[in-house]
Image (cartoon, rainbow, N blue to C red; front, side, top):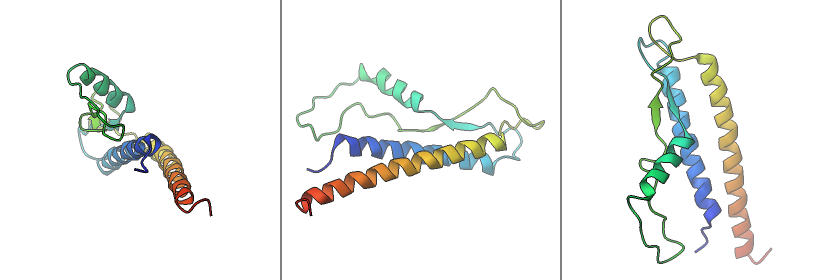
Length: 131
């Protein structure tokens, strides 16, 4: 009843940020593992999968509150970068790059959570009649 499309989009943004954080954490945990290839999460990949699946499966939406189909398959997921090699042991993890991406992801996550908090505060104000 009170869900809006912006809250759904913010939920997806948090899911994306969480998947990215998991990939970064895995990369940092395996920085000394021989032949480990860096993982990354790409929003563009999720968008491309959604567009590719749109012609295969179509649903009929009978209410605006129902989920849109197709949903992104597997939601954001990590993929391995098979091209790069940073260390002599075949490992492709660059610690400086991972730390930069972690800081960017933290800022992104905080901004999305702040926006979601604001949305819920607006709903709370509306429920209380503006008081």
